Image 1 (cartoon, rainbow, N blue to C red):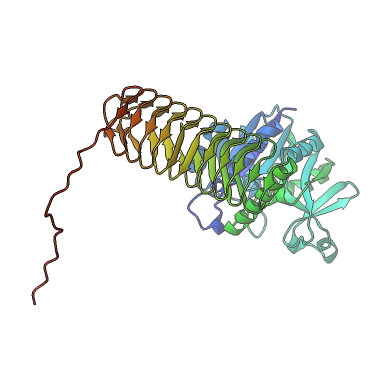
Image 2 (image 1 turned 30 degrees about the vertical axis):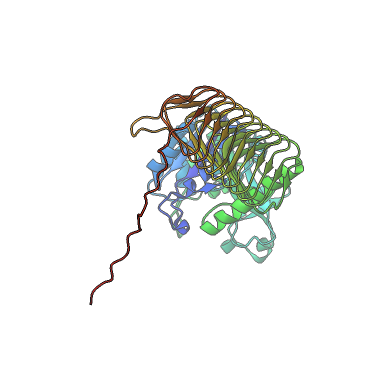
Length: 457
């Protein structure tokens, strides 16, 4: 069914106490609005209209890649007024319009789809939820299966306040009827605002069926109005993510201390220790072990690899059986082959290390091609930047680089070469030979250290 989706994202979010528009605050690494836009796409929206207001330019720029249309609500005169601004941008040929809220980020596509089906182009469908404590929410008043009204808490009778089914702020309506209803809204109320919920009474008066579909959980209909609510929703999201991973066989040392801010896919027998953060797209193959306090972003880690604690990995590929860390850093473009060892305080950037290569201590490899079984000594670096341009270092198979060496790129070390410790290499090193480039050691007889001169007076 062709579908319009309207996303209300005009509010300021005063309680957030932030200059950033509320819908651009992040949950699980993605803005609230992007979560809702993703749900709209999954439901099958053929036209999405985002209503902006506060921080409109910033919100529209952030969501420009989504392909949505934007309309502005200035000033903000209520939810009904917001939808009035969206009506001219709707595709009138789409029989159903789904209305979502930009600050309700965890609405599931399945729930939204069920609401659209309940509407069917002929009924007004409301998404509801039953709450143990419904204080402050609009109550759903029914006559059998049909909804007769939404009664605000302040206006509800004692019997109506006992109702636990409440309106979530999400609805699906026949597009043509919605356009007519919102055009007829009045602001004859204390707030002098146009309320979208007033269309329920219009539908009932016209004999249009008003139906309700229940959300599966409270979490998917919770809105964000304060940092506290955002933090609560973050933990709910992360707990659900942890449970999903564990159900698939991932062993989490503590599901309460995991953050997934993107897409994490795991093979079998994956183990993740506490306080790990996964961002972007991360793939963990079978048997991967991730130590405590690691950050992994946009990376692929091969089968049986072990990432020791406090390691940062971004934009990297780690081969099967590799050992990385602790306290290592793999930057974008790092590609580690099978059985590679990267030890403590080693940084790798835009470099490939072939099978069995090792850099175990206090080293930097930038813009380098490293062959198989290379041993890169402690304190050694590739000097890849000349102040204007980056240059590449090529290290052949079975090269041994001693401690505290500087390889001044561009430079090539032939297969099997040995570089003596403390050398600064700026010319090619022949294959299979020892190359040493350091000053001759000298002892100065009779030299004494300078002494401090006592201050006078």
